[in-house]
Length: 114
Image 1 (cartoon, rainbow, N blue to C red):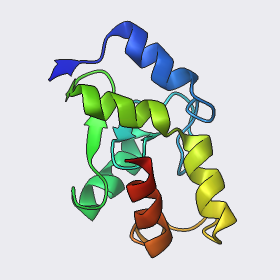
Image 2 (tube, rainbow, N blue to C red):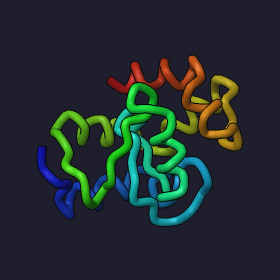
Image 3 (cartoon, rainbow, N blue to C red):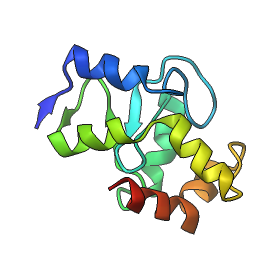
């Protein structure tokens, strides 16, 4: 496990939708759910952490160590991809975080990402 390089950080932030929190829209998110390949703000990271690692495995983009597999999941995911998938299955972006990510639809997306 290694820290994300500046190049990896830039790549993750350049993925469509990753310029803002996937849950509240705050600009410049610094946290990520490896499980869903999404990024979010500090406030939303606390809610994701409270879901447990079996639902959403949270890492800091800048401070935590990452495995190559985790980086790959981030590259395959992205806020826009996740939001589009969930929306197409009836889970709106305005759905509360707990309800959104504990849903069967979100769990299926997580499996598809792998």
